[in-house]
Length: 137
Picture 1 (cartoon, rainbow, N blue to C red):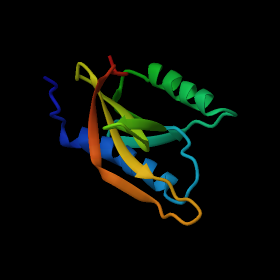
Picture 2 (picture 1 turned 135 degrees about the horizontal axis):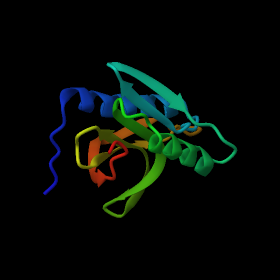
Picture 3 (picture 1 turned 30 degrees about the horizontal axis):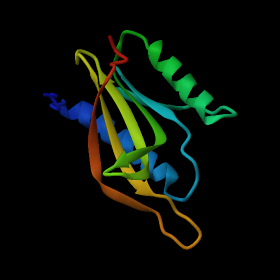
Picture 4 (picture 1 turned 90 degrees about the vertical axis):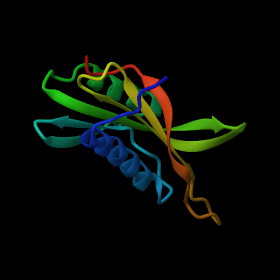
């Protein structure tokens, strides 16, 4: 069974990344993959822009792999598709790690993108998708 207990500070970081991701796509534009890093009580956000989305995500993962040892938590946000009960939808995914936790957490917020005659809308509540590898060993 997965232990979803998180410190309040870590949960705040995870939901900050989810909320920022949703706000970024609300007007219909694409999400530029980003990481949020907590270090010394300060949070910084870094976006990764490349010609192709896959390159942006790879750059973000590379940055996560080389975080200094004084980083206490990190969150990586990107746009993806997820399938729930046979229906595929757009979603903001966040993979987050906290120093001292044996595994990271993967969360998602589904949404319907803005189109010509359709308004942007979130679908349901943020969902825990399971554990992921921690970026903070």
